[in-house]
Image (cartoon, rainbow over all chains, first blue to last red; front, side, top):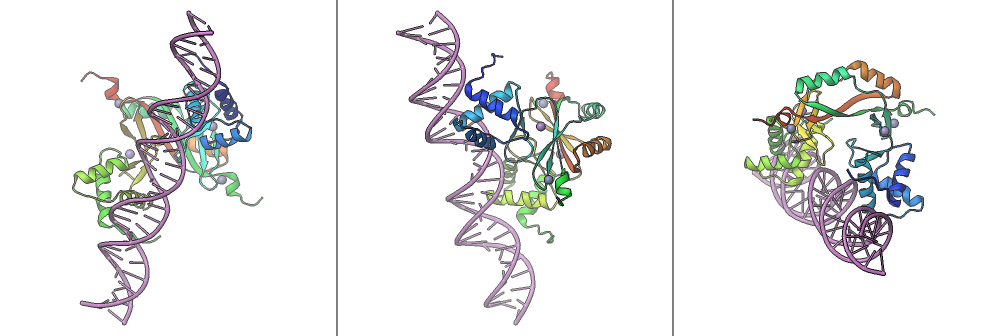
Length: 130
Length: 130
DNA sequence: ATTAAATTTATACTAAGTCTAAATACTATT
DNA sequence: AATAGTATTTAGACTTAGTATAAATTTAAT
Ligand SMILES: [Mn+2]
Ligand SMILES: [Mn+2]
Ligand SMILES: [Zn+2]
Ligand SMILES: [Zn+2]
């Protein structure tokens, strides 16, 4: 509940993640920071990503790969992973509220949140002809 | 496409996973095997779990925790994790086909599969009075 | 200017899982 | 049954992603 403290490092990392069209891993973020001339300590990148995630300014995605990915979009949305090329796209339609209610009723849980990862084959991989 | 070869180790691990009411991690599986008097090499447990998963006899669950969990139920179903106590329960209702079709249409993917993990608070954690 | 608190840095460490090479166990063939 | 060939297990080294620690630096407060 302490107020937001955006240091140079945190600001640079936030800017970078927000500017991404994709969903980079921590390693990719470090690489891109280096390309922009920044040189932050390894641990600082991880600390900052956690800080920014906790502050709600970015999102951490666990898509079942070995490494987390990060997302500058903070509104609720989901992802779809191409099992051919690995690209990750946005899924903006939410699961129907009716289904969530059904799950809550059947499991006796208060359902707070759902993480959905679709898997499939993307358009480009489906049509390999340029 | 080679035929199934259930060695002593693989059979013991399969039996154990199928007998579980819960969704144990590899470490928990090793622990339980040891309790039953088995003593398999660390790597063998991992190899066997992969083998059995590839053969479709068990399922690997990636619920966003640090370690994979394993599931003797092979029919399609989902999971809900209690953020208070960590327990993992089954979710047997499938996402509406209509929603999947919508996602496929909007993303231009062939959607093969979806991984859904709900998060919430379980009944016992909601009602802490015995 | 002094002190205190927060952050960064470098580096050590942990946890989960994979890889490798030797030893062992199966299978098929003679 | 002996032999050779293939598959599996084993022990242990290694990898990857991330966390923890302690000293150095920065920032904020008095
Ligand atoms: Mn996204
Ligand atoms: Mn299950
Ligand atoms: Zn693709
Ligand atoms: Zn609970």
